Image (tube, rainbow, N blue to C red; front, side):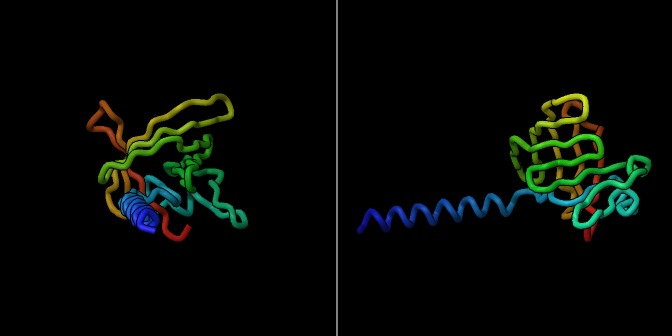
Length: 136
């Protein structure tokens, strides 16, 4: 009886610790663009599916994150590893285009709830800022 209580207490502690780690993780789900004013020029709904407009790349392009998927107009990636560290998150993704498969590392920094920057390690002054499109 005593060992069951210890096991239940241990399980509850693990669940609470895992829950608190997840609560601090950067929420990437959604549609992201370099200029928030261009959301309707970059993304369009086709039924229930969110996709890209024909001329999306003329307006800075963007990407969609849906769970472990990162979807661009010309590439699709599956997140294989993720490490959150405060405002920063590092991702390793397996990406596929029409021509090749590759492994890509993404370093992102949360700017606010609907903004992030893609960082390029080794090039400290270089970053690309993205804004989440509301309501998509």
